[in-house]
Image (cartoon, rainbow, N blue to C red; front, side, top):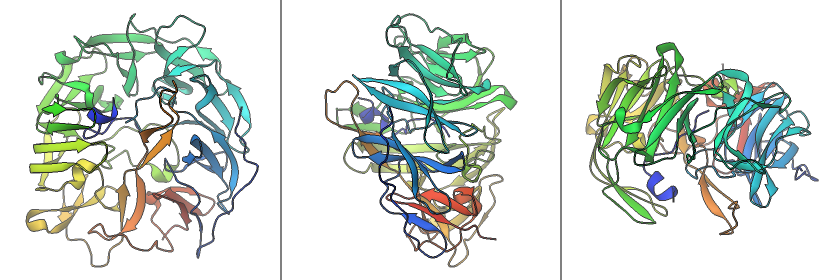
Length: 470
């Protein structure tokens, strides 16, 4: 599971247990079950013999554990987005039977909690604080959980916060420079929050390994994570690989206009932060598309996996994004490229014309590492993302489409009753054209998390489980 902010919405987006006295049961629909009373915010993951996921609660964000055999609610707890940027999709960490996430503790603050996923009981809780990132497993220590923020009652200096996943014990954490307000942009890579110049930094073994101006790598005028980012950590290549966008052509409180060619992808050396390579005019697309090596829905774990091959979009055109409506496009063209992570060299390319689904992360998935795109003449093409090979999709083929989701939750400082946050994409069965179809009785394993003979996934307004196909 990854954290990033989608480029088209960022400029306008940046601006005790609750218990569950009742346990709603699932509707049985053929083999499997359906929970139509839940509004999912994440895909289901596996911990403690339960499907665990975020859902929209009556007062904000909740996290639930579902029985895999029946779909009924085993437990439900309130969760918190604390001070996390609104465009960053929610995550939690899994440590065996334990799930670790942020929970509201009142007065505008939150705490990190470790919960036994088998029954929802609280194992440990951290001191209260203000957190600017979701909880994830630390990139350099799988037994630890990382986030950023500061604990209340201590010097108000933002820092990476590390805790032992099993006990909640505070671990040695790197201190960021005074005046910074860091947020994670990839595992162990941080935007320090300072501007003029904008700085980013990497951490290793509980210390800051390096810090340098973003412009020393991303030489594009106006490049800033404020305009959108997408990064991966690729330790096998010794690189962070990702992109940032240039400044919008214009912006208001409600909308922003982008020249989408003003973006850059680069390989950044993990060791010292220097640029290994740069590619102007492209936007990194892993996680928005299922990059080879990263697909892990069926594994049911939040453990980070790096890609084995990169994907990027070579873009042209003007896009206007707003808080309330769909983006509008003019003179838009996109070429999808597979590239070598170590060198940035293009391995294959596919001219998708004005295929907007690529920019909006909603291209239908036909199989693992295969998506359906419109090629020349709007002809549907099944594109293999590993090698660039292409074939016509079979008549009547079942694909899996994605749809962005949002949720509302209380603003920590109480200045507004609720605010809108970006959730993880929902999935639904569709034709290669993108038209929704009835859920099949059996589904391929790449669709969702497998547990106790069923595969579960989140649609926009329900959680569904079906037996695996094959």
